[in-house]
Structure formats: C-alpha cells, structure tokens
Image (cartoon, rainbow over the protein chains, first blue to last red):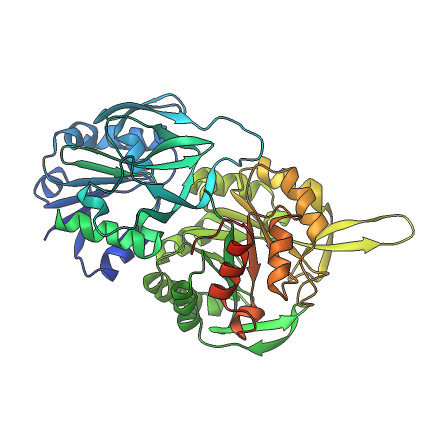
Length: 199
Length: 255
C-alpha cells in the first residue's frame, strides 16, 4: 500500500508519521504532484492557520490537484477545514470539496476557545455506518485543538458537542475528513487510520 | 462533553525521570520511555516532559528521548525545559513533540511567545508559570519565579497570566511553588482566579496528594487539567482509579 502524506507549509507532521509507523504502514512525505496522484491513500494533515496554508497550496499548485484526486483521501484538523468551501479564519477561500463554510466558535461564557482536550464523537444516526468508524464504540473520545468548526451538514459522519453540535467527521465520495487529531487520539485514532487504509 | 485532563509529568535529568520536593532533593523514578508508555496505556490524557537540566551537551540526549517517547505513545506530548528560540522549538516538534512549554525564556523575552505562536500556532505553545506567594511589610501577592522556582521576578502572577494569553500562548501550566511537593493540595484559589480571567486552558500543578485534591482543583479551582508527578511515579495513586473516582463524582473524564 502506497500512502502519501501531503507536504505543505502547515505545521508539524511528525506525529502523523509516528502514528502510521505504529500501525505498521509505510508512507512517503511529498509535495510532488505525480507522487501524490499515484498514491493509493493520501493523508492531508494540518495544524496552524487557514490563509497561510492555502497560500502554500496555491503556490505549489496543489490547490488545483487535490479536488480532482480519486483515491481515498483523509484530511485532518486544518486539513479538513481546507477541504471546505471557505473559512472564517482570515476570510479564506478554500478547496471546496465540501460545499460548507468553516465557522468561528461563538464566544459563550464558560467555554474556552480554542477547544483543547478530549471530547466525544457520536454517530448522527443510531449506529456507525461509515467505514472509517468501523469497530468504534457508540461514543469515543478523541483529541481536539481548534477554534473553528464545520457545521452539521449532509456530509456529517460523526458529530461532537462543544458550545454547539458540529461535524467531527465528513465524507463525500473518496474524500474523508476529521476535525480532531487522529494521530494523538489514543487507540481510537489508530483504529481510524487502520480503517482508512482498509477502505 | 469536553473532559478534564489528567497529566503525568516526567521531570528529566540526565535521561532519567526524577522528582524532588520543592524542586530539590531529586530521587530517581525510572526510565522515561517506559513510564510514558505505561501512562498512555493507563489512560493519561497527555504527557508532559520537563528537562530540568537542559545543558547544551544534554540536548541531544533529550531529542533522542523525545523521539523514542513520541514514537511509542499515542496521546499528546508536551516538552519543556531550556527552550529559548524558534530553532529550539522546531527541533522538538520535528522529534515528535506536539507542544512545547516555555518558562524562564518567556519572562526574559516576552516577545518570544508572540514569535512562537506566529511560527507554530498557539495550539502548541504552553507557557509555564512558576509562582510563589510573597508576603512582607509592603506587599503580599503571588509573584512569578524563574530558574526552577528559585529566582523571584518583578512580575505579578495574575497579570503575567493575562499577558501570556494576549501574546498568543495556547495554554498555561501553573505551578505553585508553595504547594509543589507538599502533597497538601493544589493552590485552589489562585488557580480559580487565573482560570476565571483566562480564555485558554489552565493546567494546575503542584501539591497533588490525594484524589480529592484533583476533585477540588477541577471544581472550586476551575482548572482544565491537573498535572502531577511523584504520586503517579511512585504508584501512590493509579491513573485508572483516579479517573474512575472523578467520573463517579460527575467530573467529565475520558475513561
């Protein structure tokens, strides 16, 4: 299985690489269009700020390539947000794979923003139906660190409640996305990576 | 629901885990890689690694340790000690740290917080504040200390906490030198006051001796996370029993 992690100017991917090593997957870190197109699985990680990340993708031309990819694709954290239509973080136009906006958490007393820590994901239906969630219990804890969120929509695969209910995971065709950091979300995060490799 | 976090802290000296009382009298507490892995298995919500020697010769040993720990554990991992520049942070993140904790260098050069937040994002910048209560004829207040709590500064703890948030810190690791190592409980009032005035998470540290102390710091103290070292290293309190105890008392916990 050839897994490629997309390399771009959006923070540290070391934890993603270690997580893949722990589940025995081999990978390549690349920003080369041909290497990415020929991958069997693609992981699009991200930490940091949306407009800087989009600028980096535009400069390398990856903004045109990513939405046309056909193989299973997983965006995490800022990687998920960039797959959406736009982000309220510095009013950034994003890749538009999911035609929903990324919004800023409202200020509500008693809730610190960004959300930092472990919160639970649940299925919007009575049980998990998405292949990415195979083997998960009805409610599982994952690690979050984010100040912006994707609203609930037709693509919602998992939801979380913080200030309001929002999309923890999304899917459209071959594009999967998770707002939390699977790479440091304990056994649950590892299960999600394993599921992604088995899709 | 967002849970409260239980964070074991490994104080590292010469590649080993140590723990003292009031920052002195260090005792050996084992291999950091093994301990880190064990804590992750037991359900720790995060791991903090503080390099308390941090001399130039020992930095390489530290980076190698960070690499081995990060490779082994699957929970967030924060590393601190002797960090003074963007380059230092870059090396630690590339070794596998998810966050870094800065302390004395932030007091010396507050602009460093802004620089690190801009370069790496607030989410990975933890500012550690060591505080001690000082009472004399003219004043009595919490004052920020540096150099492992030995050296007082001019900074008032409550104001400094606000300033580090404004400069872009993502979390505050608040250690009370008055309670650290005493096992008499966290500095509840100070933690509550700082948490009430912050929009970033407060990790309370110093003084944990019983499970009830954690309950107090999460309720009255309004902390977002509780950090401890020796009570976990010397198996006085097990992480699973602590988390079960707190969950039974209606504190949101990841079990």
